[in-house]
Length: 153
Image (cartoon, rainbow, N blue to C red):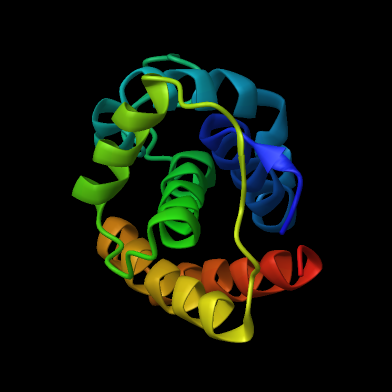
């Protein structure tokens, strides 16, 4: 068992770790993106690319940001760890964030076994591919999740 951690702390911390590995340049805006994600995950995920998304510049440049995807992944991984739910979809991530906002007390995460790690990594690959339609990013995210969960074992 690990130290008690709230779901929000896990999601933001794990999401930050994913961004640090895959898109470190986004760390400067990660806090703002994570705050927006925790308020309204559906909106943030639906606006993860488009004109001026990152800085609200209005410049018509399509930018795919990793931060919202990383937060959705972190939410799905948290759900996998505490609920033992293997299904990783955007709908489930939004529902989990809504539950996190209701503020449960911090609780220890269960032991992270190789099976849990591999299930979370595969769920991550599926979720990211569904969100982005980018199989390379999906594979990279799954690899990072596998490594990050190994570090927590």
